[in-house]
Length: 336
Image 1 (cartoon, rainbow, N blue to C red):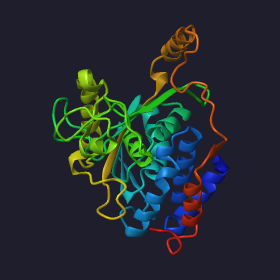
Image 2 (cartoon, one colour):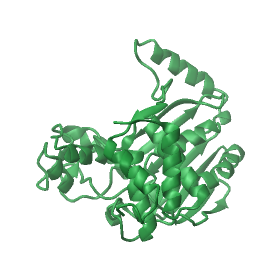
Image 3 (cartoon, rainbow, N blue to C red):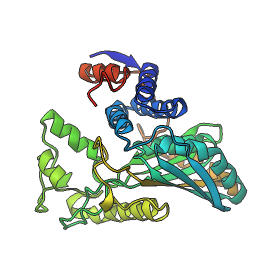
């Protein structure tokens, strides 16, 4: 299994996306997001997704050449039409204007619509935190979650992310999580590996607990809290759904087609962010320090994401690295 540097991963991802039709600046932004995920052991949102990006660039399910359109219809609202392109470059194009608006008004909501799946939300909120903003991000996804006790899937894993600046250009804390017990990728990876999943992660089509990943994918993932207290995560999932779809004009989860299908209609997803200027409250950094210090009094404890050691290189399965090399040569040579 080759040991590949994160820099090499970024370079080959950019090359693969350009070879499949993405503009240089868009490919560079997407490659940075893939490398960001790999540096944090988030394989699901890293190299795991590149083949799908390439396939959908070729089929036209996502555009790699559109220029996102940024508008400010209200003092505290920035809207971004991703024009059926990637979410990462859409956010990047709007970020500086969004930060300026938040400094002017105290808080701003950023609504991206007609976007491809954004994979790792933490990538977005961390960028905003590095510019001094408290950032909350949300998005919805293809339906895989039924209400607690139900069988009909209504919403996706509907992740949310939160990041806090440290006041020095860095990030004091940050987390990125689904509103389900586990992310969907944990189920698909277990299926691919021929492994069972722990009871409580999912139910089958009859609403019964299952340890079979294939049955889980046909059934429903449980919301945070599991079988007994999933109503807690279900509420968070609905909150994300209404903000990510309702406040952006993106599609509801029940209308989202499988995200990795090579062909089909564009995702047309929404991503909703809130940026808050911490300087609006003179007490913010004092309270942050107080909470952080209290957390550190517990041996081995820290704020989420605090002092995280990033990978400079990662082990990449032989087959995956061979696929990346093939993709970097373009669709003529890749199995797309």
